[in-house]
Length: 589
Image 1: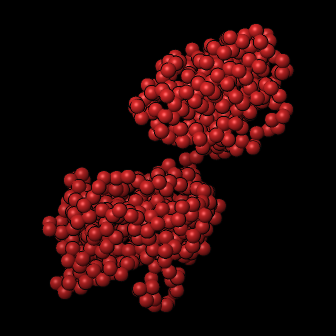
Image 2: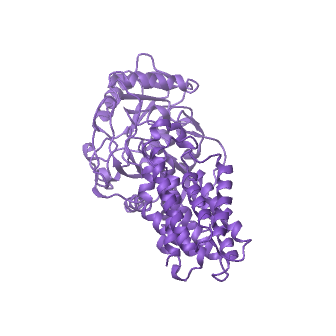
Image 3: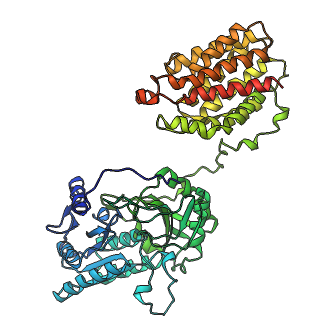
């Protein structure tokens, strides 16, 4: 999972709340407006006479919570405090007044001491003025306290915190108010949603507040904090850095043991929210959700309209949380009801479960597999054995290739080429049935390997490497026997194809700068035995790849670096030299 600190614009901490709220109101004027002289927003649809006003709130730093969840079908207004701080009672009061349509006000917010006190004070003032007010605290964080005990009154200071489960409770309350329920019914629906909701989270890195030079809190490198709160509150335990699947398992395991008794009418349906805490990439969250979905279904649960994204963040914290809400027909109808807010929209209509959209046949196995999973390389025919040798050597230099590629901004060359070569080895093994002395058999294997490498590796490097292997294979399929001259001709064909495809020339700081001297050396030694000629040509390619450190890139994504590209060998030329060297070592055996 991503742990690298995110870079962003500088912020004036003294005006941060004002600045971002004004920007939100400007950007989403069609949905929300600022409450005058208040750090709060109210929906364009509010107030609506005769409708219960759902007012939410909390500190800045958690967007989309809270101001991003204001709009028809969800909250009517949100009061916003400074970063990780409650809005004041005065701000809450003014915000509620702006949303009140005369049918009463429902306050809902996470169970934090500051919020409880300030919202509570605002509620007292509203009540004294004749406004009916109800409050529903969100207490979904299973890591923050002991489980509720039926029939036992619990000290509010020891109650659980409210984290991403806020979203479920707000959504249900907003939908109940939108359909015209009275205040008591809206409060009951919100309380039911809270009682059916559980959340567990994990963090990989802390967050840095606006204007601060150091993180508010830190997570030790190479570790994961299980159960950490959205303000950096300590979690249950620290563990080693987890893979995506291990993280999903930890999230699900901690929730399954905490799920409440299912409500009457529950048939296994659960609303599911995998929530990013501010820095974790969506693609990474989808990888986690893949395993979450499998685990929930294995436990007999049916994810209903799952959501993956940012709903309750912690500024730029790296981490995720998993929330589930057990559904009955009433909660499902309210959760499915349409809404329109800056951060979340739900359209009217039927919501089909993901499982219903999947093909009945199982999906094919993923192409990538560890290098150790390749089959008996000692029995491989020439093309497959050479590719296996190249895979072994390049895999040993994967990190180095990644560092070289990072100079141009990506850093994925090593990963991509290793992934592509694994696929190439498998494809070659399946396509090389002929005897070892037949180059046509090796040619067929290289043709298949080229397509497989390009498919698995992707990107420009994958396409160019795939072309190189395929063009070499095409020449071999027309030959009757191996020779140095044959491979010199194959190198010529490969160089022409790579140059035409990528538009590069020798000297542009690309893989061609290693391929061209290799080609030239093979031609110079065309009458010599192949093993010795190939070894000498591979040495020429290795020297040329190192010399690319003195070149200025002029093609590909590295070209934008200009003079900054000096001093670092080209990753494509380096990986090609490794491939050619590995093949030379194989031929020497």
